[in-house]
Length: 260
Image 1: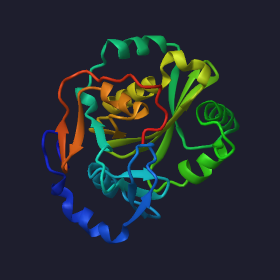
Image 2 (image 1 turned 90 degrees about the vertical axis):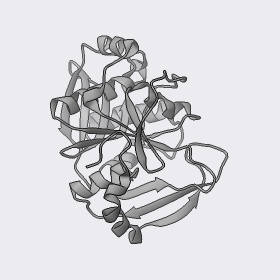
Image 3 (image 1 turned 60 degrees about the horizontal axis):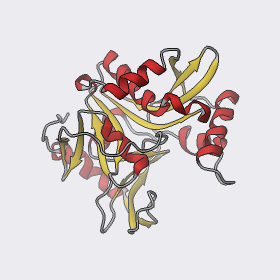
Image 4 (image 1 turned 90 degrees about the horizontal axis):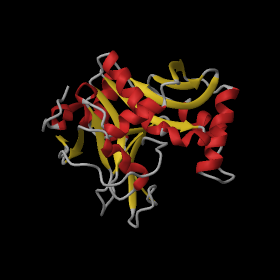
């Protein structure tokens, strides 16, 4: 397994090279609304063994349902994979305040399951965050969350019996991949997205998990730039996981939802 400080992903090049025949490149409109042409390098799989998923994540790939992809845009390198070493993480003052705001919450790991309770909360979140007729909780669960190719779970946050938020994540022996998070819009003051990542970091520490993947960091996109506030973190630059400079993040952004 690669380390964090300048170790080349090329150590795992052989398995990645063997998989390249399954991938194709498809032009697309930039999903992050940047004014440049985008392109997905992607492939569909029925199931991926945990060690292979680990290699793909370390190579900068992401999962969307049963598709594994990376951005391979012709004129843009804005999407930078970011991961944490949970054992190295110490919360800053703002993150400590977030922990204090949420002392009344209980976090429970549960099987991936679209209950009525979750559907109501997710539809409320989507209506507030992404209003429109083309998004529904049922579609997300059926087409994305439940259509998984690895070990996927939910972490549910409750105040008493009331559901506040749900995080979806993939889990391996030595890695955790944050997939998505939704929450009650009325609880925005809690900074629930930040709290979700702090809870995942704590879970990783408790279970000796080395790598927490937070997806892409995109400096120019406020909804993605919040990830840089979790320090220290490492960026995949020129095929090498590199420790980010110890400087404060410049953009607070909005409360995060998707981690992709």
